[in-house]
Length: 178
Image 1 (tube, helix red, strand yellow):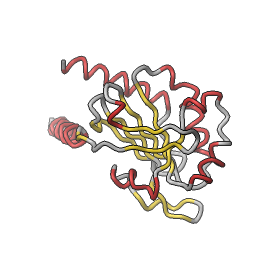
Image 2 (cartoon, one colour):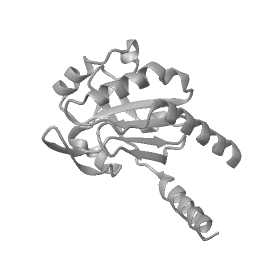
Image 3 (cartoon, one colour):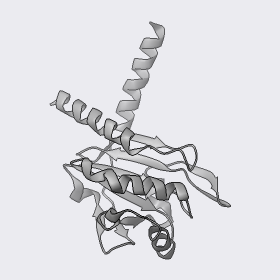
Image 4 (cartoon, one colour):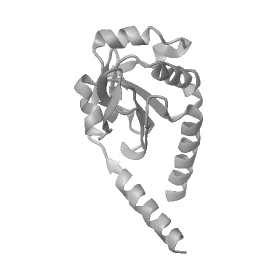
């Protein structure tokens, strides 16, 4: 019983802590001329994919998997973010194999300011650099953070299938709370 109360208290604390309003932000794509603004995405879930700085084959595989399956999630906007230079992002994006790559631009997070704003942990050693950990953050239809997954290393990612289940769960909670 003691463990159940502790688990419920942790769940309550985590849920309240995560449902916080996020300030509007805008990102510029490096792979096409589009921009993403959070304020224009209201009414949809937004999934922020904080990819690693530098060359990362896991990021390529992860991104390709999402590109191939993303259309199966309705009212979900996928936002892929890298903190590299424009040239580095373009070179990296050229390695994406999906036919859907044009539909999902890669956005630049200059100096990882957005990663810092979202408090994505920093301090991961990768290719001789210290970078932010890979992360996935879900914002609800009101622009509030409702879920985050921070990988322990470059291969620790939240799979598309896990995301699909999480969105179904969040949709169920939303219907329950109406």
